[in-house]
Image (cartoon, rainbow, N blue to C red; front, side, top):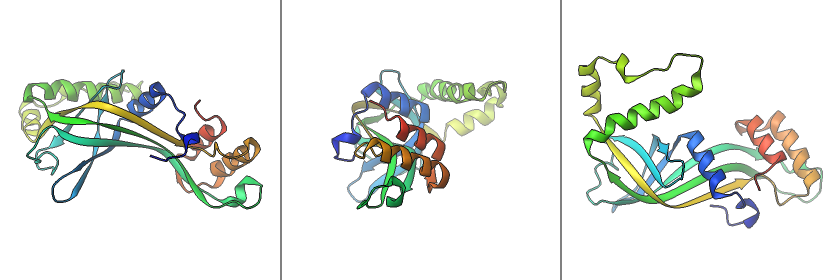
Length: 206
């Protein structure tokens, strides 16, 4: 995470809400041979203490012999290159604005009987954001097909011991420079979710 304290002012509850809303991140773990990383959808509890997810059995992280696995879940947000010309003040350098939340903890496999409940709650959470579309449920699956697919994946949970967020939004610049840069990011930003990043720059979380 970025060491500048100006970018680390976001509350634990704001970081939890951001990660929960995203529901997708990179799970990183260190094996004896190589660093491992896997892109995963996940569920985060409201108190931020438990992450639930699943891995394909062939995933290298799922094959790590020693458990619990010490791991970090990296949740990315909007980001963009920021040109020095956008501040309207001299002697500036290029930078990259972004939002990211890291959750660190111990990962362990769960019993197979937990899998269907996790899958149902995960799909329900994301399907709720698609209203008025009728939500998809596992009942739409042929039971034999569903069981065959479920045998290929393993449920996991991470017990979260630390949550850190970096919201790098030019908080270290004069307000007028930050606002001007926010306008330029919205129009010309090179990254993802420019409208959202611009709005965060205009009103960084306190």
